[in-house]
Image 1 (tube, protein in one colour):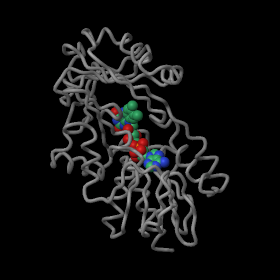
Image 2: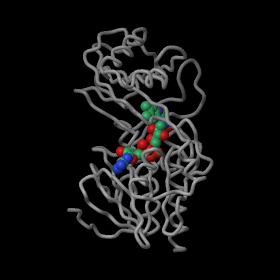
Image 3: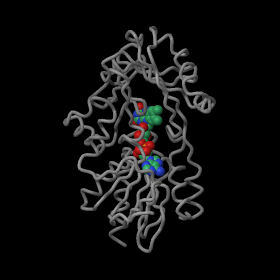
Image 4: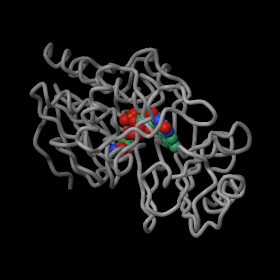
Length: 328
Ligand SMILES: Cc1cc2nc3c(=O)[nH]c(=O)nc-3n(C[C@H](O)[C@H](O)[C@H](O)COP(=O)(O)OP(=O)(O)OC[C@H]3O[C@@H](n4cnc5c(N)ncnc54)[C@H](O)[C@@H]3O)c2cc1C
């Protein structure tokens, strides 16, 4: 039987950067906020994994910033020991923009943002429903949460499915706009090496041909005790091999990277990102789906296909919710 949890001010689905930034802002404004995430670990596409003494970032590889507000948060995370500068660019030329990495790995940034927030992990939301002057959220285990406002931050197709499951129908222009947002896929390989790779400092190559878009040496990057590489396949390869056995696709990508690996691969794991990066970015930094009570969608599809875009969308979503909650 579904159980009834107490009412809160704002429920946020997703503990990626957009959800965490919005939660910080809303909590700072005095609201009660609860984040729900289906994953085991915080951070969404900021993801790190260990295989023995090897550490991998297998989602976002680095963070860049041009926005002053987000730069302040990165500086604050660096001061707390959770972020550090990696380098100023890859391949031949450095472009002068700092690439930040997590310390000890990328999920440290999510953990930094999550401090003092109320979060429930391993909680898969299955539907968002409208009640009288509030929303209810149902989870896959039948738990029900209620709130005066809801922020959805999963990739847009997943967020739309949650609204549909709860019988919330968007106005047709908004639905068409959001339904048009598609994402690249990415098959990511995490390989433990016998010896250091042949990748030159500062530790990453962006191949311009072939199936691989990125290969990084995690030891040179400064996050791994043992030699290891993270390989990202490009969208074309990932789409074409999506239904293939993952270890087979992983081996193909390792074979394609021999000139940079140059040593024996001791073991490897493979992860598939169905929603890696949005191919289109919406015209608004977040989407106000209903104003009274506020129902908002945010994420990197709204302010740019990278961590900073997700953060800016989180700021915008918090402002939108604060404005409309004060009016309702
Ligand atoms: C392979 C790869 C490489 C990348 N490289 C870079 C890079 O180098 N630099 C950069 O800036 N950006 C990079 N990005 C993009 C960056 O990771 C994203 O833009 C950003 O992390 C997105 O944050 P978000 O909050 O919008 O979404 P997400 O991080 O995807 O967060 C959404 C959250 O919602 C949760 N969720 C989904 N459905 C449900 C549900 N039903 N119930 C409960 N929870 C749910 C998910 O578990 C997830 O935690 C990369 C992404 C990938 C995949």
